Length: 305
Image (cartoon, rainbow, N blue to C red; front, side, top):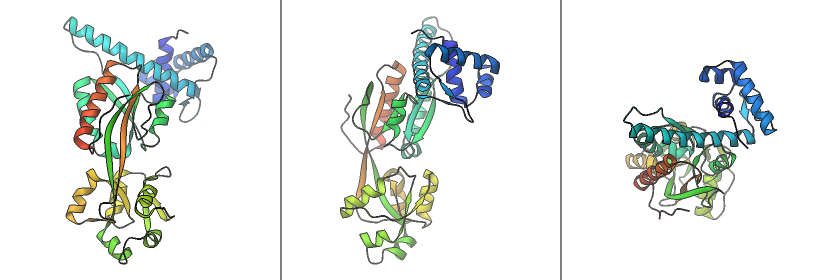
């Protein structure tokens, strides 16, 4: 089936901007023109592509078409860039790549990737933050062209690069530790102290308890869906939590945080998964991700599938 790319452009704009009016402004056309293009595309596909609301969101089929449009746009961008170099003229505008990145990576090592990608690849990066356990669902849905995930098995139609491991350390402030763990860190003391979690999908505390004690127990849990806020709550004694070693080690060295159980740390292996049908730009971005992971994550054998 052949698609009209003006209609796909309108669909992608509505998905990005969250509404027809905002999409029209971004495309510098009328709202009526955007609505007409979406309607024509829906008639051709035979399915609703946008759920009208505030914000407007694409359906599953709509997201697949958006992903297709992004892949074609990247290929067109590469072709235009090569042509510009051949005839020695100024390069094209930056292409956009949507990536799903877990919050801890985004707050620690992934900004190094972004800096290099922007400088070396002439791309505009759009990040969708999520937990590493769930980013692969975003890839399957077509909401991103690549993800950082802890899922080792390649998603169908995707290429996987193993990056290394993010180490997590169970910590508490000195004040919190003295107030709650005078008798030691045991299942009983853990059960009666407040724990910090990022969101309802966060399971790393349970993993740590099972590693230390063989089982996990239910605790009073405070939900802090912000990396900066999470670390701040560990520091001010709101509760104990698990922080990335990249960020936590300086606080351990200064004595602001105390490790609950010495050397009982969780390692979460991370992987880069990207569409096998995507462009040279995405392949080169994967190489940058691998190189930065080698610098900032715990060593792991790099394997590509």
